[in-house]
Amino acid sequence: MLNALWSWLFFGLHLPAAALVEILLLWAAIAACIALFLHVSRAAGLLLVPYLLWVSFAALLNLALWRLNR
Image 1 (spheres, rainbow, N blue to C red):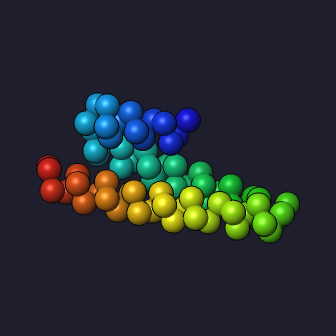
Image 2 (cartoon, helix red, strand yellow; image 1 turned 45 degrees about the horizontal axis):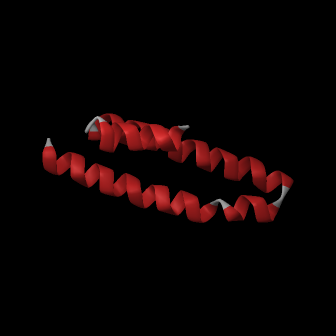
């Protein structure tokens, strides 16, 4: 849901500031899942690391575009 909401805010509504706040929430949710999953299965937690890295990259792009267009 958070991933879809970011796309809607950023691409659909053209609200990069709101999308940035939302993507930070998505990042925190992924990090929390990693921490919780590592206690259950190390492999499950580690499989989410590339997703966290991808969202980190998207957040940096979102920040850059927001700063350029404000």
